Image 1 (cartoon, rainbow, N blue to C red):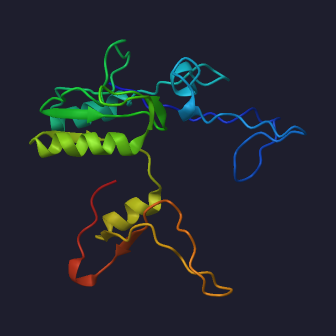
Image 2 (cartoon, rainbow, N blue to C red):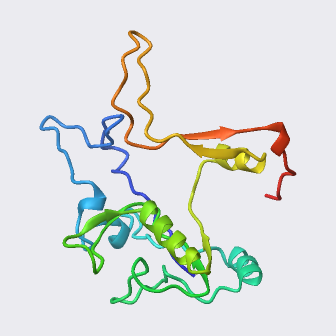
Length: 197
């Protein structure tokens, strides 16, 4: 059905600044983040520089298994994507399979005055909006294995917001990370059997 895009790093022989992931040079060559580039220059549209591949389809066996269970009638991330198609703004089907780009891109929807960076949060919001209309949505996205292990063990998840952690040295409160912190609560009263996979 649809595409999952591969993140591309600079060539191996090009050094990276460890945290910023920007190329290092005498002139400190700072490149624009992919999400800020127009589609014609964005690697998520253009493809991986080393092999040109950028659309990764769901393996046929997995797709057949999911299709048999959920009877999909719509794909908001089709491949190939028609030129005038926008999965973030169109109406979805009664049962949608969503395999969105695995990264952020610049996107301008009908209500946007200018292009905005859109990534997994935009797809999650749209999936929730469609679900609230009584529709079934199966959204696939890569996550770390430890997260799936905690959920399989019955963890309840609580959003703690953007926590302003305190410094060990003097107890002063930081500015926060800009990201929400999840608390995973493993309570023996809520234990459940682990699902398959």
